[in-house]
Amino acid sequence: NVCEKTLNAQGFPIMDSSEVCAEMSCLPLDHEALALLRRLRPQEALQVLQQVSIQGINNNMSSYIKIKVRSKLGDPDNTDEDPKMPQPVPAKTEPRPSAATPAPATPEPTPEPVKRPAEEALEEANEDDSEDEDFDLLPEEKEPTLGSGFIEEEPTEKQLEAFGRWKQEAQDSLEAGDVKTSLERLTEVIEGGGGSALMLTKRGELLLKERRPLAAIQDCSAALQLNPDLGKAYRVRGIAHRKLGKYKVAKSDLAQAQNLDFDEGVSFIEKFVSEKVRLEERRRKRHHLGNQRNVLKIWCR
Image: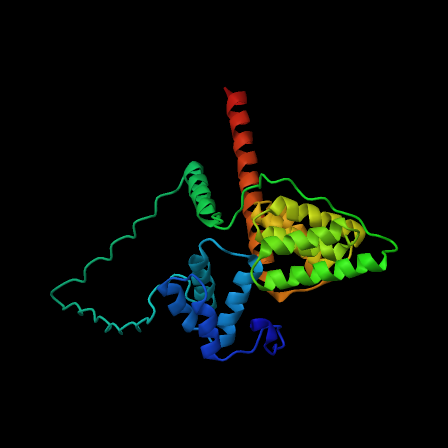
């Protein structure tokens, strides 16, 4: 169990190469992704796997891991598992012109064609489209959101006993991989008078695992009304917004989460949504300029 390992200074379990390989074998990865992971040091490979777990990536896991590993290797475009060193090319010696033969004239360089603004705009749009792919978006779920419950000011001994039992059953179910039962037990705690900010955030985290981002956002928002300084609630809500493609809101939530409770594993998600916001702003400006040009054309007719 990774959770029982000794942690290093960055908060990751310390494992040898055989243990990391065992972790990799449990994931649905293709041959190329596994081969790339084995090129990293064990702790670097484990860090990539931890980021996959934190983001809850299920679709296109192999593609995501290939991008991350090639980025770490400084070789984002190379798919060769064993790249060959380029062979040196012998320098060419130009023949010296003899006295009787004049040296050939150096041809004038051909000027590059000047691109029109419309062509440049089209190239930028195509570039944005290629950079704007997000393979891990979720649709808005159809299931209704859950109630936020309440907090019993003075719970009875019987209530406290029930809370403890439900929480333990929720933890046991989660460790056994039964997220649905774990959700039901946490809901019993929340609706029974134990709806604390932490309980709502934990349930929001499980709802996100169950591909219910809207319900996760509602739980985390309710948690922040009870405790505005709960960094984990901002973090889970930010990831849920990212899954819905609401990158600007996600960026704000993740920045607040990092200010309150820094998590190195979230830095990659924060960087990802920041780049998405930058692309959205560039598209918005380009669209605005295009509208201005159209107005000028109509006015000048």
